[in-house]
Image 1 (spheres, helix red, strand yellow):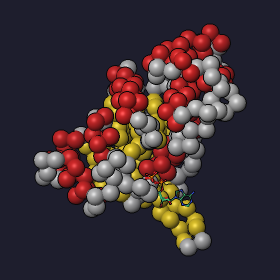
Image 2 (cartoon, rainbow, N blue to C red):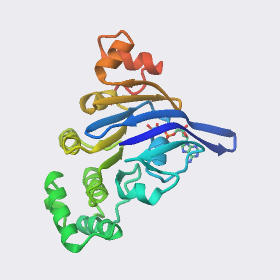
Image 3 (spheres, protein in one colour):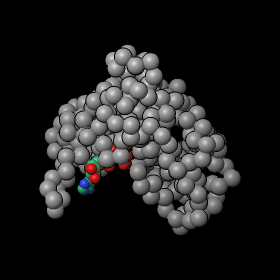
Amino acid sequence: MITAENLHKGFKTKSGTVKAVDGVDFTALDGQITGLLGPNGAGKTTTLRMLYTLMKPDAGAITVDGIDAAADPAAVRQVLGVLPDARGVYKRLTARENIAYFGQLHGLSAATIAERTRALSAALDMEEILDRQTDGFSQGQRTKTAIARALVHDPRNVILDEPTNGLDVMTTRAMRGFLRHLRDEGRCVIFSSHIMQEVAALCDRIVIIAKGKVVAAGSADELREQFHEANLEDAFVKAIGSEEGLHA
Ligand SMILES: Nc1ncnc2c1ncn2[C@@H]1O[C@H](COP(=O)(O)OP(=O)(O)OP(=O)(O)O)[C@@H](O)[C@H]1O
């Protein structure tokens, strides 16, 4: 389970401070997919970066499985699997070596790494590319490698920044199936997207972010009810005050 409590983050720029995250609160439960939905620049990536301890919030608190991220970031990383916005796959290594490298960083045995690699490559349908050097991989192949690498230590909590970004329809469908599978195993899954249809198709709970703030949260049904709209798209437009992010 992941909790974010009143998170704030600003960036100093030449023209002043950009308030990227301005009081974000939410809880992501185990056995659920929680989607952070918001237009470009809403603060999703910055929120996720704080959750996975890459960045310290200016104010606010984060817990992952009850561990305070400010007090013990290393312990939080042990129970988290992360697909960052920059996938950062090592080009000179094969997909298998990329996965193994992360397994070694987590202190896993060679046998455990081999078994996890087998299970993840089957689940992500990446057996054919496993022993290819990742230089030259397509975007989908790089994303799969980065996800397998992120999950090698079998984390209870999974954070993915725009996991279907740049993927074709079939790969997107397969990715959705994979995320549901993680959810059905009882994991806490959080992902971000700026595309409403993406979030509606997958999420048990939707957290709508605009201009660094949570403007609405709930299941698709709850959001429709809250904004008195029969259609989730119309509820989303009402929540963020614009039509940005409606179309892929
Ligand atoms: N390192 C930084 N320095 C300055 N401004 C930043 C930095 N990182 C983010 N921002 C600004 O903070 C705001 C939120 O950015 P963020 O990347 O979190 O948005 P996002 O919701 O993930 O957007 P997208 O859907 O476009 O990826 C934007 O205005 C962005 O320009």
